[in-house]
Length: 68
Image (tube, rainbow, N blue to C red; front, side):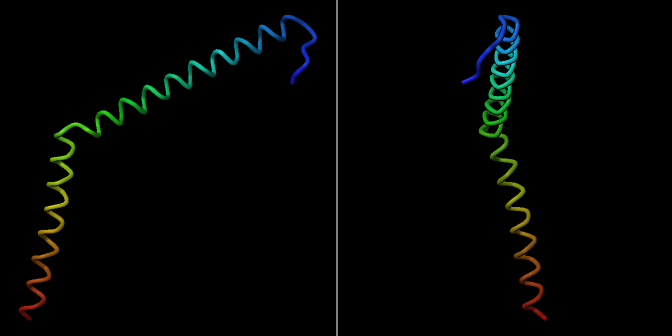
């Protein structure tokens, strides 16, 4: 527990803690926004398309190797 010597120290510390709290809230808002963006359907479709493309190329290479 901190011992304060003046009201100015208390006020300064309260302002600092309030700013830290506001910064934390804004960071949480950004995390929430990013999370909701990641859950949108077009993100899932894009991810699935990229995966299917990579898997398709892998299967094509695998078939080519088996022929030789």
